[in-house]
Amino acid sequence: MKLPCAALLIASAALAAPVWAQAAVVPAATLSSIRVTGDARVSAKPDRVQIDLGVQTQAQLSQDAAAANARQLEAVLAAVRKAAGSGAQLKTASYSLSPNYQYHSSGGEPTITGYTALNVVQVQLDDLARIGDVIDAATRAGANRVQGIQFTLRDQDTVRAQALREAANRAHADAEVLAGALNLRILRVLTVEESSPQIVPVRAHMAVARASASAAEVPTPVEAGTLDVSANVTLTVEVGPAAH
Image (cartoon, rainbow, N blue to C red):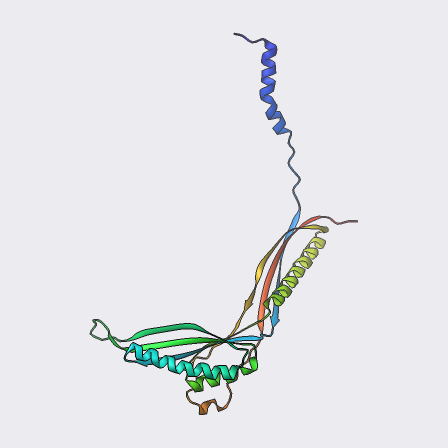
């Protein structure tokens, strides 16, 4: 059946309509923006310390090495609690009991010559003036490993917030400078990105403990130094022509 010419014209117009509607869409205007990053570093004096103290013992039998370690560590803990005071916190950081091997130049299976037990306790102190006394008391009581000292902060949030504020202020100030140099002005902040502030702990390593009680007559000097807290904030701001 043949359609009338008028019907054909109407059908053609209906098919073409979506194409005309799509062509009539006007793309949204592109925003003009500036992206800047501000960095900040804040120094703070630490008010907390963590000391890792260890007792290492050796014996031919594993149970003898473990028993000797337990006795020696018990004496160390009693001395540390007395020197550190009631505010100290003690917890086991690590424990190991492993065989000692003798390797032969001719090859073959190594021979077990004994066992080594190592127990490391972490001591947390808020009274930094007691650090030297705690280390000396521990070594006199039998601690033969001082694996590290780490200084931290009790209130880290306040220092983190300060670092973020300074980084954000610096980023906004830089955006203002760039906009002014280009004869523009900031209209609004589009996005804010921040990297979590990083607190770098101060570590003081002591590889060798004192060998005798007489050597501990002079307190062990330990300096806390300062902690550095860094942050960076990235701003994307919309800009427009400067007002005249």
